Image (cartoon, rainbow, N blue to C red; front, top):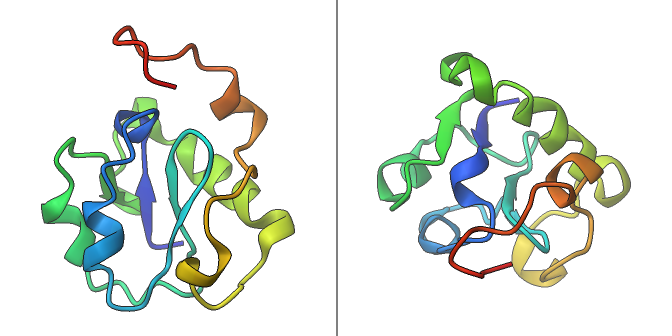
Length: 109
């Protein structure tokens, strides 16, 4: 795995990172975005543009966010490697641990 999107993206999904990704490897779930690890070329273009600082290289994940490596992998179990997020669109593949997080206090979901 390469880069991982963490809690800060849940219910935010700004999508600036999606627009910047040169290989279209950032996929949209119902509650957050996910990076397809095989399709990602490790360029890091998405990291500095994330307005909520939700994207980390897997080895640099804060300890309390490390579980996102597994939830990211779970998102792609049924989706696989489709070869580009734009053609797939929004999916309902969010893993249970993401869906179980209460909506943000501002009412977004």
